[in-house]
Amino acid sequence: MAGELLRRRAHWWPSFPDLLEDFPFDLRISPEEHIIRVEESEEEGAYVIKAELPGIDPAKDVEITVEGGVLTVHAERREEKTEKHRSEFHYGSFTRSIRLPEGCEEGDITANYDKGVLTVKAPLPKAEKKQPRRVEITRGT
Image (cartoon, rainbow, N blue to C red; front, side, top):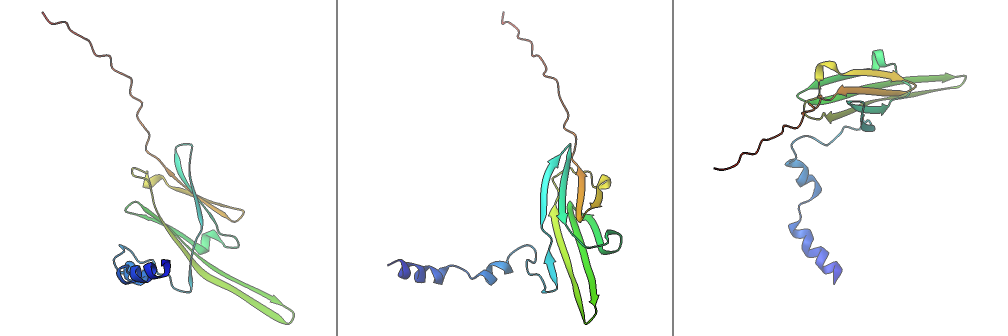
């Protein structure tokens, strides 16, 4: 019974590739490119993104761009280990795009790389603290 129901649903449910055709951006990634795993949080009035990128030189191998409220981190890893009778290569591209919260100060974004972790901070807009206004009540005559 359940198998028959699944077979009937398969005819009207679009395939995964068909769903991707209507998606607003390309989710397909080339075999040479990998997604960077990130941790997002809010700390001290800033939107914070942390990405583990061990074994790279941030000055040469990382590019961070911001356009239209989207922050993109692109990294390239090139590593070669040579031993007496063997050599090993590790390489690849890593990319991640993250939509920033509305109102982030794009011009004040900072980035820091420490012990294999890239930390990007985007200041959030300061919330205005409004004092309550007392409304006077009048009497009808």
